[in-house]
Length: 223
Image (cartoon, rainbow, N blue to C red; front, side, top):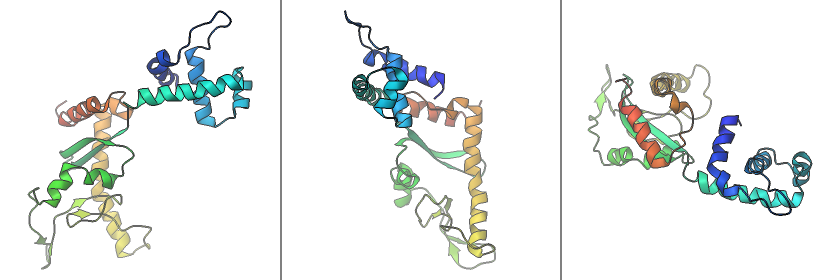
């Protein structure tokens, strides 16, 4: 952890974990309380090892760590990781964006929880009727290009799972699909290159983070 991240955490939870000096001894500073807890969480060291390293007794450490963890949970519960889910066209334009779904939810779950999927299921997106490909007679549906994290749908095309045999039709298909999907990856790269704050966590409550990210999307080509 870099110093700025540590200072950020300390500023957030310092008042909650700070203790007052007594007549008999000085209180362990908040920064050392946070430091020993982070060391424990990152390394899994025993309390005996931590006592040797920080010069605290095992009994004190056993009290500090739960207290600091409780403060971290309380403070950071407002900074849950959110997902930016977007639909873009071949010209790098955002057609749909959804912000706010928790990061622990899979991409497929994010889609199914979005208004885009609801409109897709209810045929409210204005997708043209299936049309034959050039030189063919069989109508095929218009599709959104997606990666393997999404489920199959009449209007969602995803790659074949697993590693396909070299030179096989499935491998060629996956390659072509990947090239088409690369536009999406490029859009997110352009967005983070233009607005560098998106390269790191936004230390904001979810509703505020959602507004800021959506504002970036709407101003992507105007700045």
